Image (cartoon, rainbow, N blue to C red):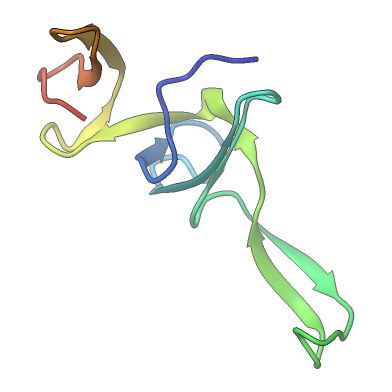
Length: 105
């Protein structure tokens, strides 16, 4: 199991591969395999046979999971990819924050 500070619906930026520099919203994080599914990044084509949902069949464009190491969180204040860290608040609560600017994520 891999620990990560990236959660569903976060905005991330790809830092490796052919989609380097593109950003998207996280759809799913799989901690067990260390993979992440991001909207609009790592798109692949898949041939589909005709079925009820797609009566014509054809080629479908879909996202494929990619390693967690290939993405970084995007800070809205810094306007760039950044590392996140945790800090504790009163009463055993924690929050994520940007290491560059200190903004809460």
